[in-house]
Amino acid sequence: MDADKIIAILLKWLHDKQNTFNQTAWANLPSLAAEIATAADDDSFSIAMIISKWCAENSLGEELRRSVREISDPGEALPTTLPPLENLTKIIPKTIMDAYKKGQQPGALNTRDTNNESK
Image (cartoon, rainbow, N blue to C red):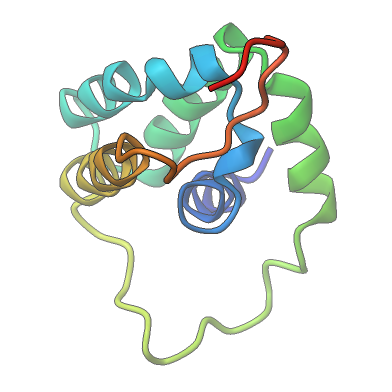
């Protein structure tokens, strides 16, 4: 899988598609942030491997593969308003934790829930 696509998909899920995460995966986001923050290499391939492994462990592996197949051609230019991806071990964990904290607010998050209890 393409490393940049994997990172872009995770960021999209955090920003626009938080309902992609099941409750367990959502609860495990801080561990993903911590693992990325302590990664030995600050390159997209290493970060993508951590994300892929985490997705597989949190029942999101197939969703990640499907999303990678659907994402647009990597040759497309990024909008000029986006900063280049650097310092991934700082930016991605901060983005994960910001989304996680925002999602912890009452009524802010609608994860996939197989539990029939009322909330």
